[in-house]
Image 1 (tube, rainbow, N blue to C red):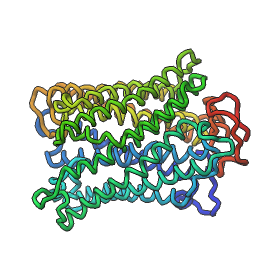
Image 2: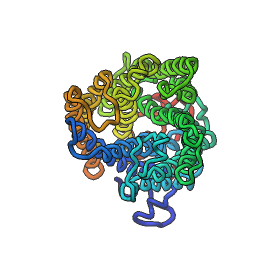
Image 3: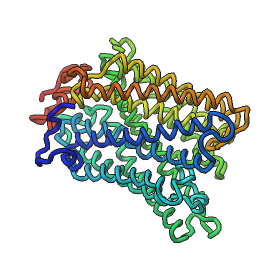
Image 4: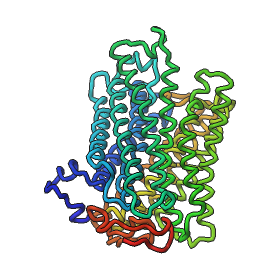
Length: 532
């Protein structure tokens, strides 16, 4: 990856020069490696789940093992891949570069956040090997079952508790960096859109994550000491847990998707050779999504029991939050209109994102209506919607960002033909895997069930075949990207003809990013360069 890749000023060598480094670029790469490692574990677990559901009856595991598989799959993919994937890896690497800073505001805190993330991930995986085995509750850890089960719920809750602190520290760092370290002349409306989405995300991380931390701590105390917060047998309220959990977890959806939207907002104008259409509309729509995200948690609980007025209010606000998301999609399409669009792998992945995320968003409106939600809640329709939004959205945006940013990070290009083939295979496999789940859910197949009646066999079989195609696409993609680290052609400083600051320094960037702090005189998507 570039031989003298970020020489360490403290004289350390080997692994220590990485895991003790305070350079934001190295920390971004450490996050990237860890995130990809956890993603691989989550994919393997997902493939095992689909093998089990390939046919009615037992296929490869028993019911208890299947419960643990879907719980671990959800926890690893959400807390250790989707939430930290873009902001902690690509965000850490490129945020200071985009605003003309030499590093983040708190470099040591940045390193601590990575250590907390890794410790939390290892804690979650260690439950597999501890007495009682991994949890079997689902990733939401709902009581009262999560209080009673003999599995390692407390270890998993502790892992999520620790990774929550990592998320809070990252958010604080990003907010302070953006407020205090912008280059001279970089006003708020000269910031790149990726930076804006990281800023919106950081506020969600700081304000919403403590709610989850407190909730998980109460659950651990409940299991250890029988405190009775959520146990109805002791006067506790399990619905209170659901409210507290989703007060965090719905804003967390936007921690996952806002940085993804920021990536697409950078790529579309670059490959359209145009200034982005509606810059301020995209900025304010991102801030609106982050704000409204705090007050829509109740749509996860329409079937749990709440007043009709509450249901109508939550339904209305959920429909409203779709508007700023639609604004972004409209602006991306308008940016490409009459542009000199150049189809290269990053843009191809961006097209896949826009298509898949749009399906996820439109089916989200079906969930938002109380009447249809009652029918499909807890079915495979929700599984399909969630994966179209999170994997088709945040996951494909992560792949998009990798293909766009990797040449800058490593100084080397990947094979375009292989990346195009991988994108097509991924797109086909994804839709074969998840679209039949919409049909299964509408027909009434419950999610998280180990077995099912024979009438659901056809769509489950198709879905399992899709998982193999998707895995093949991932394999092609990652082999191609890994190969580029050693055998890729030199990328040059600006292989995509990008306009933001990071494309004006060498590939990979020097240790302190800029020889001299730049002076910003233009907007981020102007074709005239700023002065370095």
